[in-house]
Length: 138
Length: 320
Ligand SMILES: Nc1nc2c(ncn2[C@@H]2O[C@H](COP(=O)(O)OP(=O)(O)OP(=O)(O)O)[C@@H](O)[C@H]2O)c(=O)[nH]1
Ligand SMILES: [Mg+2]
Image (cartoon, rainbow over all chains, first blue to last red; front, side, top):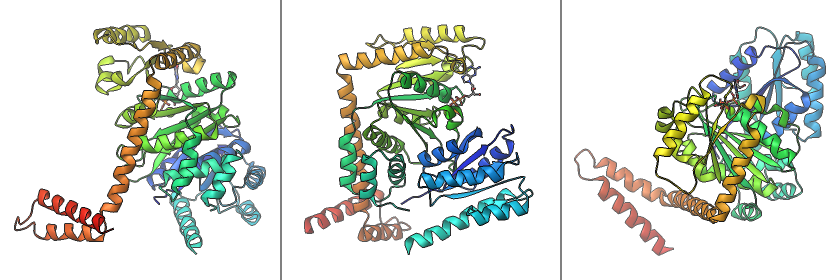
């Protein structure tokens, strides 16, 4: 098998800048991932449907609007509904550490706060993929 | 991951999009998919009409695909879209961004979109993309649309995979000489001059049609359709042109011929990959090593090495 890690980079909500998400998308591509970039203003329903059709391994969400405490749980709920139970949900933006902790406790992957570098995200996804491979071959 | 192919096939048959998506991944990853699963899928395919969109970067292909898909949906037809973008030869990564222009199709249950990276498979894209198209076809899609950037080899692959090939140009790139160089002229069944809201569109169309008239007369003269994809202008003309090309293919029994060619091509490509896998067993690799070792004194040649390898292969077949 020549498997590639496929990552959906999405930016839900109404804030209008996609530069951050585009920078992350390009960095992930340069790290060797196949990045599906879907643009701005995605609803949770759209994000999860894209993840399903594209059969991604990872959903990476960028949220600057402050709506993370409603968006992440809604996305998780839809992922469960559609059976995307082995897909990693991660993301970042302007998210205070206490919120990040709460979200991670709800079952998201790592949530990256302001000041995290794309290298941190890349390394995190790589490690996640490696540990998944190990559990699969067991 | 639940990748049990039989289970996937069952779910696929009950219309599970998740199973469809997973089967596509198995094909893309060269995963283990037994021939009987592939057979089952293939036998269900063969109904869908396949349209390829190609052209220079940024010409508006995705925007057009989005519009034409909406038009087909209004006719009640279901659509599968395969959007192909290049894999970076340096990192192996890819940025697949065509969905940005297709967001209003995401939640339409009659549309399934899959982004595909070329993964540096030399000319192999055609077979892969076709296999993905076969699956979408088997899933019941009426129309399959490929989108691929026309800069390298991949647009030639797309011609083989499609029944109708649409080449999208814009006034600037419509600098026809450039287009001809790119080999885009020969492959088009239909030209779209997109971004006709920009200056120079009419001149570009005149130039293009002058060049087309210089060519030898042929049964099918590719029409040039003027579009402004972002304003939905010209979409109906494009639909009509595709329909006319479809009728032309049918009247001349070219559809069957295309399908036969596609079949032959798939068989050829499968035979060569499978043979290659069988050919390079351990003994064959060792024979090659020996020849490499003799290279310094020029005790060997590629011809001798190849012949010895083939002899070895024949012998091992005879033994079986
Ligand atoms: N002015 C004008 N702009 C257009 C038209 N059609 C598309 N565009 C714009 O052209 C840009 C590229 O459009 P896409 O549909 O992404 O083009 P593409 O050929 O799919 O691009 P790649 O897949 O990156 O090669 C976008 O900003 C579109 O809004 C048009 O008819 N007129
Ligand atoms: Mg595109």
